Amino acid sequence: MMKKIKEPIAVIGEGITEYYYFNSLKDDFRQLNIRPTYPKHSSGLDYLEQEIDKSVEAGYSLIICVIDMDNKKEGEEKEKYEKFKKRLEGVHYTKKPRVRYEIRFIENERCTELFFLYYYAYTSRCFQNQPELLAALNQKCYYEKTEKFFKKHPLHQYFEEMGGDFKKALRNAAKSMKEKEETGRDYTYSQMKELFDALGIKVG
Image (cartoon, rainbow, N blue to C red; front, side, top):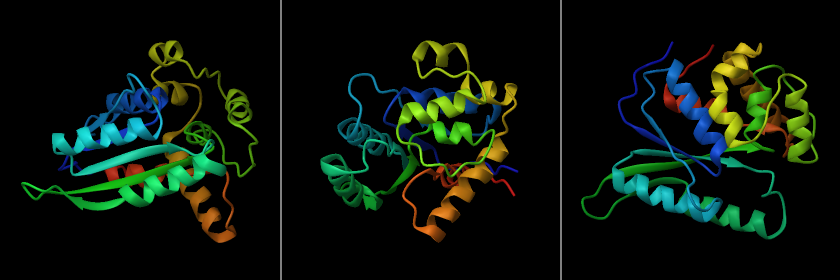
């Protein structure tokens, strides 16, 4: 069951994958009141901050950033991301007029494609890099990480047509987070169930 969303929600991804995926969801879940953003120029944290500022100005009360963790595991990139997240995550208020808004971070390790793989099966395998994860997804269905492919194949509908199941993906994502908390592992997890909870999509 899905409750009606009272407030619009901005969903910001670092790349085009998230944009096309969330647009495809709006075809099946017409009650979703979300604004996927398309990265026109740059990507990464600078782009995210620009889009957060635009979303605040537009009046969004909840702004969700979907993050690929594959390039934030170590070194300078990890440090930059952790500082960025610490500075922005949580509840804030605009100055005049004083309006409340919240910023949340939703992480996928290694990337959003793990959630796509969860449409088909659960795994806690440690993928060494993104191509290795994409290869595992391609064992379940043909997939290209290209704009041409995304335009031709609305992603949510495509995965289900190819034998995947959205509810299974949500359950598998929740399982990955439960195991992460229980074992302390820092790989192969998806917080996407939390994102869809915020959007009002509940799966038992």
